[in-house]
Image (cartoon, rainbow, N blue to C red; front, side, top):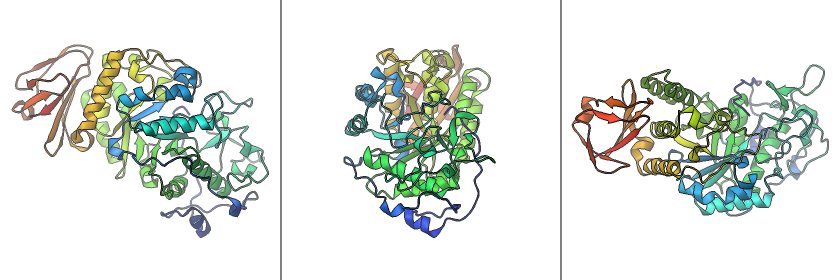
Length: 478
């Protein structure tokens, strides 16, 4: 859902031994379920059979290049349309694909068409295709060397989700859904989640619901051979649920799974996520390219975000995503194609791992309402596509960019920094002004000789250099 950041208050407590044994969690958790009337016939449940061969080439988190797929922007607005573009996505340098929600969405009177309004956690949105089509897409991505993660909405469901009305035992989750799976008001009516009238709020004090949710997540690992999840509005979900869920999923030893939290609290890494959102960094980039701050501010935000993140967590850095592109295109946001590329260099090279949102790489010039089908011409702006390939390829090839020590050099107009790892030494200069500026390098950079990473040839920083509007210069130290 769009930028949900409400804090969800859960009752704190200790995990019952029976729940620990049921899920095989390796970490301790803090959940004690309240008594519930539904479910309990857990002995009849068995995990689905594994479909396909588990993917064995999941990249290390530091090496991730992620691509967010809004299926509605691809030819046909379906799985086959995405499949037809997989070669082009791979050619960008991508190794992890995040599919926006692929589930049936609510159709009751309260629904507004949001893909995050889930009607069936184990279903496939028929407008995208079938389970067989999804399996084919995943298999083709794997064959090209790309992992696939699904989007997951844990906080709520559509009002016509089968959980709101079903009262019979469901073997797929080993439980009997009950009204008590939802938050209820004083009159016993199901409450909406936060300010979102189209979705019903789930009750994480209900153990049966937790079990059903986790088994539905496991379903996709087994039945579609996917490689993890991006979890929407993770801050709003009780932390102990994530520990319980991710520990359980990590006990699927045939898979190396990746978990991305749309979260900002840092605790998501302790809960088991490898990646967290960089909300503050994105905001700082926007402010910088709007001319409302100086380059030093982006370094301050970078330091603050990393300090808030427990080891070994990594921030996902982006210049747009489905929420942000919903109201403004990157072309408008960063004052043109060159500005968008300059912003991406900063996001991809400073720290963290980069995300590309589908349509970003071709410079789509309009906002994209992700509730709707919005066809994008993925053959547009080949020069911009080539630039993204170049930027990503350099990052992939240089450990200094991925894990190196950062040294910042403050300037009023240029984001300037150096990344070093052993003998790998890279200097990055990005003009964040829509005008030509003259940059004078600090003494520490003036004595070395460099190679222009993208244009080739030697270059010296001993004398001031001219940088055209929103240009970027990436140098390797000789």
